[in-house]
Length: 278
Image (cartoon, rainbow, N blue to C red; front, side, top):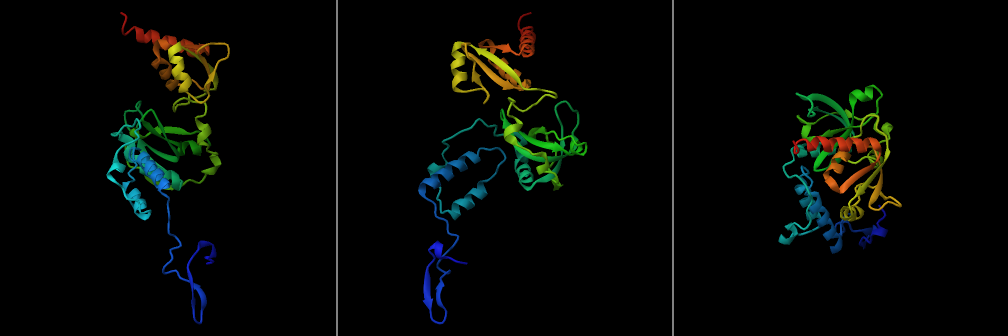
């Protein structure tokens, strides 16, 4: 190995000439600046908040290698996320992450809320995604693949009812052209209704609520509607999560477009009103 670019120490040995002195030189020695160490510690504090991602042992190993000493103040929480510490699905996190990274087919028992009993599934896993304090596995069911139905399905982790087992390698991993950045590009939340299409959604907010929506957009497609004060345009596939979001704003929002979504929200509000105004 040519070590000249590594500043490795050399010395002259009779009969051998100039040679490297590997005993006192560690080619793999890692030197990290203090500023970088602080960034690593901050990243570690964030990762520790991911439910089910037990990385304390791995982090301690890294800290030891980098000669990073954890002071008492390092353990103080300085950033906090809205997480569910007792989230039931967190126990599957590590196994699912490993299966995605290893591109392996997995199997598990799964029970949606509408089912009375779990069903055994074989799934090609692709992505773990969090929404509204719940985690979802995005994958392709094996039975769909056999039907040449290359559609991705989401599985809520808390609805998994058995251990995750590895079944083998994913043979067609690249064939699906999976792109997580585009999968939910025009969706708020997780669900995509069958046959759903992207529509122009226009919401009008109260003046005060509009200030919040301006500074904290509801979706990356949000655009201020020209010529209409406090109104915003979105490019979305209407789904249950979008309806719930709109309803959460109560009287501070009105659906202007599309007409079918406006009618649906009006119907939901009317049904809710029956529970209070009898």
